[in-house]
Length: 463
Image (cartoon, rainbow, N blue to C red; front, side):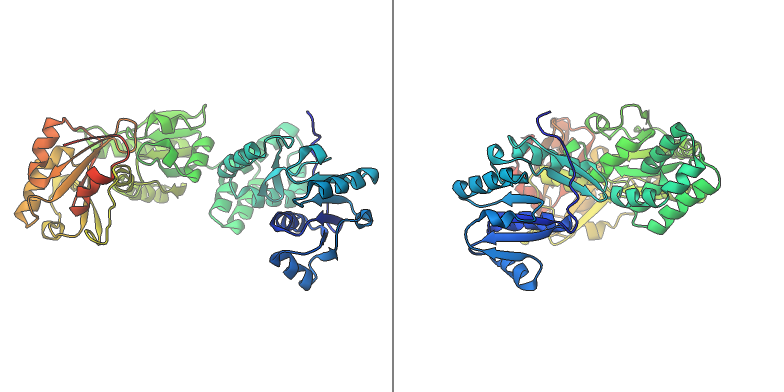
């Protein structure tokens, strides 16, 4: 290890920044967040620093660098574009045994400023020892996406209750398990939902009634259309906290690969021709079974749980059973398939509205508003329509939609095997048969579908 990692307490302590440009301003902001008393030495200051000097938030020392500027300083940052000046700052700091950072110059620096992930009071610092700052920044970006913003409030909550936790749980092993429960359980869930009073009450109740008693919970997670890059950050966190994952068949293997390795994975996907209500009843039973024994359950659905995913029914069941739940939205198929096929769902010249439609009605009742659906200058996105293409085309044309209206069938949208079959509405069923289109596929009908050929950018096309 070339550098010794250290977190400095600069609260109320003087720090000198040499340089008055935009880089210096950025360093000043970071130092002020740590509570430092900042002095800036430079002939001139950029507007932000000049304003701070006028307001008394920093002290401006005008002129070229002099060693006396380091008097009473705990730390110094050289942020000029003149290496000769930076070298003079470093030499003067070494002579006084004051740590010095020269921006973008590891050779002249006695300490490095790391890339920071701030979840105060939890702070993560990433350093490349000054040799690869871009790599440190990229790692910081990844960690930012993985670390929940609730971690800061959670750390503060745990600190407030630390004496009571120690008294209630004198056994070190049991106390460690309790902190794991704080991180992974309902307390963190309440904080994610911006309900700190509920989080504190949950923690207090756990201690009052004698821990461990771990109520389970269910998170409805939208897995998106299949491309794991479209998974939301909250969805990724939920997958990494899950004890059990109940997943649909449309939840891709690539998305499941991102989940916690030791989580139980149970396929609950519905298949064509089976009794879907019976399968849904089994899903309800599994959610309740695992949540009641204190497990964190992720109900993973392709697309979004609330777009033709029966997510509402599952929430109603969980509410009736008194089981805590959260919902993490996903990118629904209409948005993803259209985007990956180069089809804008709305367009100033072609479509001023979008309708999301299921081709399967409850109990096979055809209650769709065909007159409304057949109007022009709107985009129709049909879910679960591959087996209904002939009927859909006939109904739309019969109610006034032009036979030459463009359509696009997006098969396996956003996945490596994506394929788009496009043409005219009157030819849709025949083209689908010719090209052997299979589910999962989303049907887009409307003038915008005619742009698929011109704007296509992902996967293959046919028709």
